[in-house]
Image (cartoon, rainbow, N blue to C red; front, side, top):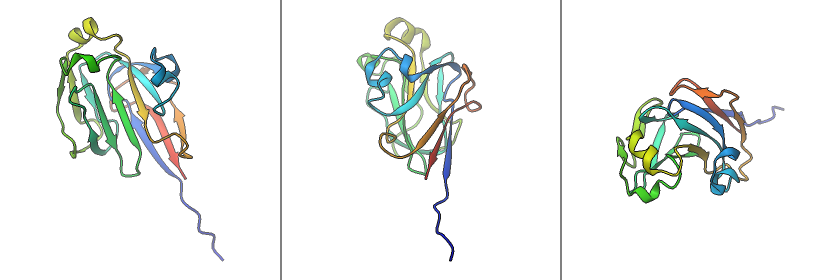
Length: 162
């Protein structure tokens, strides 16, 4: 008599840093602009701290500290990749504040940046924020139209899972 409908689940991803919002297609790296890693958005950071964009668990931090992977309770996996060609900096310019397995809350500091060093040594500071398990997932992703983002306040994207 009653249809068993799966309830839509919505997850909000907040800006992990203050800065200028950039569409993924504008990121000057085909891995991101062609969405090979998944759907997402990017920010050019204006401040020196990357914060957790939602409540979740740290699932990845490369030795080079240039990125962080977070998974939420709904199973969304997000990679924050700080700058372009920053893996070659071998961790210089980045100070991690969390480790793999840590539970984090939205707004919690994840990585501190030496912006001056990164401006001088990275190809670009644009920071892609990619849902790495979005390809062929059936998830609906709604991106913000905001051009400036405030860390922990601006919703960059909403993920709807069915």
